[in-house]
Length: 239
Image (cartoon, rainbow, N blue to C red):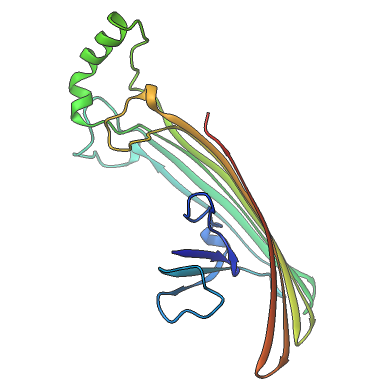
């Protein structure tokens, strides 16, 4: 599959999967293509998704939002493992603001979103039923520290987008858009099947940044040119 933001590539060349995307509050529309691709989409053999971000208008518009979850306010999960491994704390919050810089000419739009998420890891019944035996072997045979199952898994991020649009004339317009996502995750399970223990958990820190510029020129009713340029950078750290 191929995912683009404002027509610019949003795929990781290392893994072939999509990179992080803007908040839903920053999205104006999206388009999904699964057949009859045009020549501009020559790389994909699966589905193609193009996400179009919002732009400012002649009126000021903004929003504030918060998504909140807490296990204290949830019904008890009958499938949750015994022993209190059901912690969940999530706050997803943000704000948007867009409007004119020069009426009918230049506009801006910005969005910030953050998440603070903490939860209990998932362990299957085999691990829970044999944790005492596992710790006994680790401590008495190998001289290692015992496993502490009561660790918290966190997935926190901050991302932001700033977009500037300018109309040179009724037939020529441009935009510049900057996006950044900074994510910090701790105690992630490599196997993600409940069999691995906290000593095998990994941290994952990464930052996505992209700067996109686009110039659209209408020469006639049958001839339109779009020039698009992007610089993108991804930073990984897996301590």
